[in-house]
Length: 65
Image (cartoon, rainbow, N blue to C red; front, top):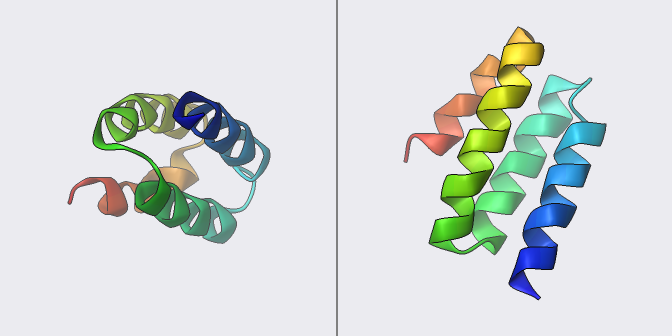
């Protein structure tokens, strides 16, 4: 079940990556819902998205905590 939430989160983040505000909100939601080891995997995914779209860089602040 938890793995499904991680995959769903990745799908949502991919779809909203065009809008920085939405992306940041979805990152915040994901950090509340996912387990610690899933968050580590999500960080890797988000970093790859940031390489493709540098505007999303401002959302990395939520991952530093």
